[in-house]
Amino acid sequence: AQKTLLKGKKVLITAGPTREKIDPVRYFTNPSSGKMGFALARQAKVLGAEVTLIAGPVSLPTPQGVDRVDVTTAEEMYEQVLARYKDSDIVIKSAAVADYRPKQVFDKKMKKSPGDYTVEMERTRDILQELGDRKEHQYLIGFAAETNDLEHYGEQKLTKKNLDAIVMNNIAEQGAGFNYDTNASIYLTKHGKRIHWPLMSKDDLAANILQLTSTELVGEDS
Ligand code: PMT
Image 1 (tube, rainbow, N blue to C red):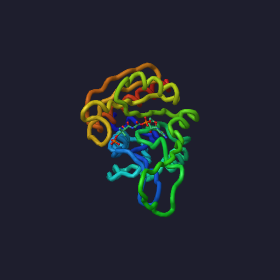
Image 2: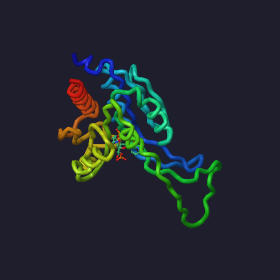
Image 3: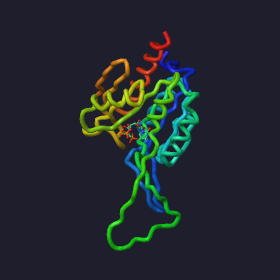
Image 4: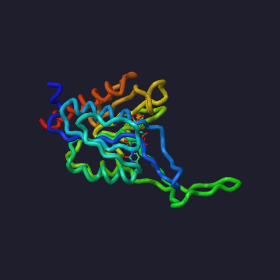
């Protein structure tokens, strides 16, 4: 039965960082490896789902049977995710999307000069907020990495972004968050479920998230 838990479901997952260029040889990014999102894609496939993975620049092999779309910037991720949103049943935003990008992008390499240099940054679009605002039938799951007050920030994000669930990663814990093979987190749902998961492999965490999601979906259908 396990292998058919998500049969017929279209699952859209984002993974990895985004990269925001300032000139042809420089950019802003973050340490996301994509491991969490790729683990989710792998596990969703194992459970029988039709999986699309929108991946930022990462060096990971595509899980078997998964439809992968590579993007670089937050804006490209926004476009690829939005284009597939209507058609998706479950959307999981495990990517670490840049909140800001350089306001001006130079075509030619910037030359250094003595003294400081200030880069003006502008906000990128908040993909998750946009998905929450446009939500119809989709089951929408957010992610966040925090060092403290996980439940408090989780509650806030659940409501503000109109999510069905959120995975709050405790990056203060050794072995959790960016680039590790393991993660420790609290899972919160809009129906008030609060689950504290100890440090475990990202594959096990992904399986737990998807198991719970399928239970919640059955609950909503009946
Ligand atoms: O990739 P790994 O190395 O395995 O690491 C996994 C991870 C730590 C990156 C991942 O598990 C995680 O926690 N991702 C969210 C990182 C984060 O702190 O996100 P945030 O607080 O900036 O954003 C919260 C949510 O909004 C996320 O679902 C994010 O995808 C989304 N967001 C953020 C900004 C933006 N412009 N658009 C968004 O959709």
